[in-house]
Amino acid sequence: MRASVTTDTGDLDVVEIREVPKPEVGPTDVLVEVGASAVNYVDIWLRQGMEGDVPRVTGVDVAGEVVEAGADADRDVGDRVVLYWNTTHCGRCEHCLHGDITMCPDYGGLGISRDGGHAEYVAVDSRFAVPIPDDIPFTEAAAFPTGFGTAWRALVTRADVDQGEDVLVTGASGSVGHAAVQVATEAGARVIACTSADWKADRLRELGADHVIDYTDVALEEAVDELTDGRGVDVVLESIGGDTYRRGVQSLVRGGRLVTFGATTGDAEAAMLPHVFWKQLEVIGSTGATLGEFHDVVDRYRDGAFQPVVDSVISLEELPDAQRKLADRGVFGKIVVEP
Ligand SMILES: NC(=O)c1ccc[n+]([C@@H]2O[C@H](COP(=O)([O-])OP(=O)(O)OC[C@H]3O[C@@H](n4cnc5c(N)ncnc54)[C@H](OP(=O)(O)O)[C@@H]3O)[C@@H](O)[C@H]2O)c1
Ligand SMILES: [Zn+2]
Picture 1 (tube, rainbow, N blue to C red):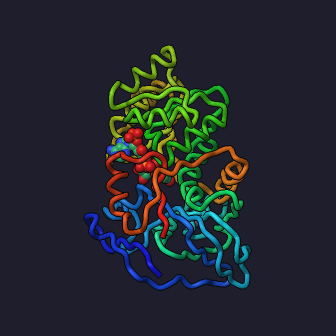
Picture 2: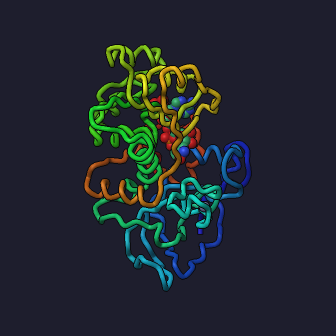
Picture 3: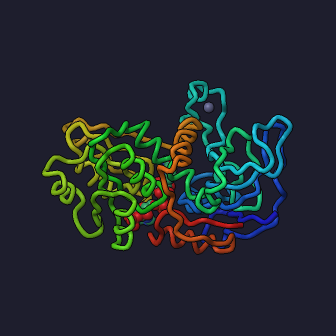
């Protein structure tokens, strides 16, 4: 089958189209014909040697149709599914035993620690294939899993966002960010979204953001101060790191919570300890989502609560350009790939 393989660490020329063996299907597995997959920042981290192993078929987010099912699989041929991506975990550590596989030391998944969806087919254990209705196109469903799953765990499980709270989202135009705006809005929070461009700001308002700050233009903490009458926000959802993280900490009300799930700038050294102890803040890490959380957020998606945004639909050959566009902040929502 055809696949996009990151053959080594290095520049974009290590991303190549190759012919690779079609995955084997075990007794509890399903073979999914990929309808669409999506581009993620982790594709860049993998190529740069920061996460996962190469050579690797990338592609964390996948939607498609079951075309083969093992004898003991829970799904049938013809089922339309979206895939839960954190498929790798030990099943034996204290965290796995308590059902939180996102805490497992062996935690990994599609497109990172095993081959992913930038290909014609993917095989997964059938419990990771979650049904979607006929009226959701694969190109839209592929924009859903990591963005909404990560936003859901970070805001609902980890931050426990409540009705009437003020939530600040950095990187709000991104995969997780644009989902977080919707998840926080649905939870009844007032959402302040941060972005870098006017065209993104308009789209964030359409998704439900109550206020938008261009944090490349103004001091974030001062803009928050003005919007909250000097109080600060209850929750910051942060993924940029460095200066944005620091300004996020400064933007919190006393007793506020900051949830961090990424450091896109690569600057992860910003502790801000005096603010943390003096204002008695909670700094909370979040990664991925459990299978249970993924089912919860897919249920809400099937009910029509959320709208994943497709920035553009590309071919496998265009993946290197897509990585460049992502690193250049030229994307709103998700770039989706049709094999
Ligand atoms: N822990 C986890 O489980 C988990 C899950 C998903 C993602 N992540 C990580 O979290 C971060 C965000 O993920 P994502 O999938 O939402 O990424 P994304 O789709 O690329 O969105 C990131 C957003 O950050 C903003 N940004 C600010 N500074 C940037 C810079 N120097 N370069 C590129 N973008 C910048 C951009 O929006 P503006 O231009 O509007 O500011 C962009 O839309 C990434 O670092 C990713 O690896 C972690
Ligand atoms: Zn484990």
